[in-house]
Amino acid sequence: MLPTSTMQMSPSTLSAQDLPNRWIEDWLISTSDAPGSPNLPPSRLQSPETTFEPIPKRPFDISYFKKETRNPFKQCLEEGSVFMPTTPSRTKSIAPSDGLTSDQANTKNAANSKSLLANLAGTKPSIRLLTLVDALPSVPGKNLQALRTRLHNALQGGYIPLGLKDAIIKDTTADFQRSLLYYPIEDKAFDTKDMRTYEGNAILQETLKQVKKILQQANFCHSIGADGTEWQDDVIRPLLKIAIEIHGKDRWKLQNVQTKSINSAYLPTMAHPGNKKQLSHKTDFCFAHSSQHTEFRELYQQVRKAYARPLAHTTANTSSYYMLFSGIEVKVGGGDSNEAELQMCIWMAANLRKKMELAKITGKSLVPNCDENTEVSNTENVGGSNVETDVTKQPEFLVEPAVTIVGHWHMLYYAYPSNTEGDVVVVGPDIDFNLTTCTARDIFKLIALYGVILEHGYQLWGDCYKDIIQSLARF
Image (cartoon, rainbow, N blue to C red; front, side, top):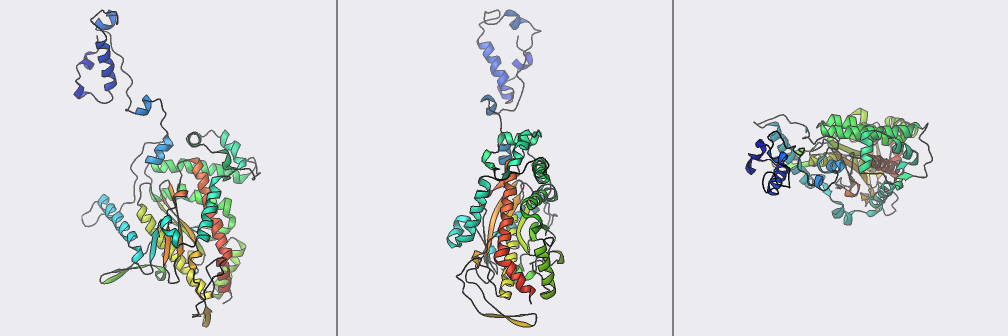
């Protein structure tokens, strides 16, 4: 006899997990004409001691019946977490005010960020945030397209040293191998021209070690709803530092500018009825031409003696005497992407305005390798002497990349001045290069992406920034 407890359950009281059991029981009853029928032995139908062994309960998942294995990395890309159940991210709380709860205050702040971002074009000087498609007709394609081509080439293949191939295959770390199972690394990803071997090479060994650590920490940070500081310290900082170690050497320094203030002279002003409001937002990180490198150190020393003024758009002494490059804003998983874009746009605009100012003071052009310059005569009083300056007609050729990071996702933007009055255009995100820290393959690609950004920054140094700093050093 079937279990009494099961037979007495009505369909309305059955859960989705119990339905398969009930279907089987109904089928058994319908296929037996009477107790003792040939279809089922009498002992199985009549014995009160007989109990029906239920099917092990599991959440209803159609992929189980299709005999398919759920891809945890697809879940990562759709929901966030790879190895642990998705949990709500612990976004930065805002102190409740005006009777608002923390959640309500966060919602209000997100709405405010979205509104400010939409109104950046109306600030003085203006900042326009455009998609790549909308911006292309008005962007001088030479430098932007050249940068995008370098990025495409770097990520198409050869972004992992060949000497790491065997070490990757032989590695037994569970998280790392699971990542490779679902998102394998193609043979073309390995650089066959790089003949370094893994054994005895500290850089290759450290690279693999950091990639595995970043993968583990990124997924752990998301799964526990880590705050911004944990994301920065455990994921972003190690990623950027290994990129500098591989591609930048001592030419670059990772600069934490989270607590640095932007000089008000380079901030946009938003007109409000009755008052004017300056928007002061900044990123978490940027790159600085490092004083550890002999070339930069000597120039910095000369400039501080001759020019004695900041080279950067910040007010802090620790960062204002470096030439800063790019900007990277970090938000937790599920964080406010509008706020990240707002902070990045304001930081990049101030950065470019400062560089345009230095170029104007020294009479130099910020149009790398461009012969079509229109000179406009200006006189600036610098260090007690009048200096003739010129302004370029097409400063848009100066393009600096920037990045916003929300949880796992890294999104790439490009910033350039649109005229000589300080108006700036920010283009992005460039969806061709949206990468995540969910997988080992993408982490290797991110190292290569930041490597191209650093190489582009050094090219800008050679094309224009170096000439500007040398001119300042001669004042």
